[in-house]
Every structure is written in structure tokens, then in C-alpha cells.
Length: 68
View 1: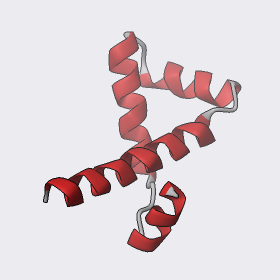
View 2 (view 1 turned 180 degrees about the horizontal axis):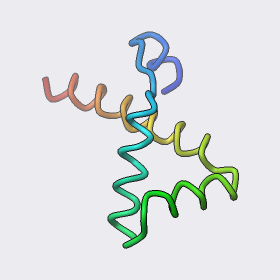
View 3 (view 1 turned 30 degrees about the vertical axis):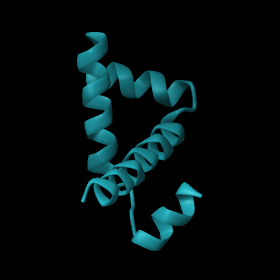
View 4 (view 1 turned 90 degrees about the horizontal axis):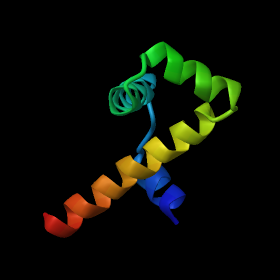
């Protein structure tokens, strides 16, 4: 259902969105952005991060429309 909302609303994940998530993770874990990116790549989880980022963006749109 969230994918359908993303499609309908034209919500996309840009590389800058993923970069921000990686930066936030690095800050939270006390690691470098490069380390986080390498770990995600090695574990095959970069796509997961992209999907999670998309769901966050969709959730914000939904929340904003409810609070609107």
C-alpha cells in the first residue's frame, strides 16, 4: 500500500536522501560514513536502506496530510 502511495504521489528516493540516512547512522553509531556505506554494501543492504528511506518519506506525506 505504501508503494502505491509513493507511485501516486511521485515520491522517489534520491542519492542525497540515502546519503543523509548514512550520515545519520554514522553519527548515531560513532562511525564514519564510509564505514557505514561499506558495511551496508558488504551485507547487501543498500537497497534495504533505499526502501526504508522511501517508506519514511511516504509516512511523512501521510502524517502531514493528516495534521494538515
